[in-house]
Image 1 (cartoon, rainbow over the protein chains, first blue to last red):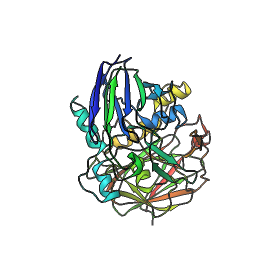
Image 2 (spheres, chains in turn blue, cyan):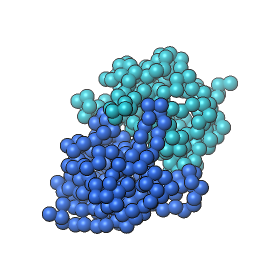
Image 3 (tube, each protein chain N blue to C red):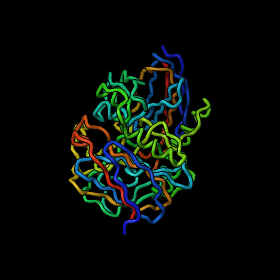
Image 4 (spheres, helix red, strand yellow):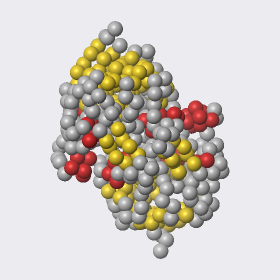
Length: 196
Length: 196
């Protein structure tokens, strides 16, 4: 049963509460669209989802249903319930306007950093100096040479991931507004969010 | 000419000011010892060295002399001047007591998180909810399968890296206190820091 449902328009963001035990499904509506995902402990904002800690605890970049995502303090914060893609990114910070300036020479570009900060502001969470999201559907390849390439997402239209909250959370999701690279297949499209 | 020199005892930390244009050399005294390295813009503490942004801007995990390290806002913050090792880590957060509890079932373990927070407190910088250092000499291998393994550092006794400040900085360094894994070759040893 779906309790709440939103469509995030291309290039925009969304914030919502997700209570312990609730499952959120994030769907790539048209395919090849990245969704930056952050989550704060609603009862202690100093604790949040930490992709680096999650990599350290799991010992792999390849996550699968049943795997736990960890917080800054190494506590289970979310569990992967379902995943039709299996390729997501844990190492990139959220894109931000300064990134577009440096890499694409574009000023005042929309960004996941701005979208996420705006979304959490509605829950009285101040903007941090950086956002380190779990980047759903983002296909970052680290080659044996050390070269890093951001390639087209493997997600097709309708692909999704489902995550169960292991504590009461404030969550924010950004439909990544980068159309300059393969990150979103060179076109920005919507993301669906459902609480189940 | 060496202007200042410190030996960080095994498992401890150090904070210092590094002015724009100055070079800091960090030396692995006995070999196979990781040094977690963080840096804040001394004139705007909301800006700091960001390993994730650096990976994004360089497009590789293999850095070399001449490469620039970037801040949270995609500005050059440090430049690698010399490096006798060539293998460092950009993806792991600082170890913290909660990590030792989860992974090794040990309580109140010394940690880089604590060392770094203590070091920056002397410069009136409040502890963040997480530290994301540039982990000097740390040998994290991401295998083609996605498996991540932390292996013995490639650094031998006397190996070092030199970094030039591109802005006025407050820097902190922690001699990683993990003796439970190959991270520091199963034994914690000192780190030398020199400002040149």
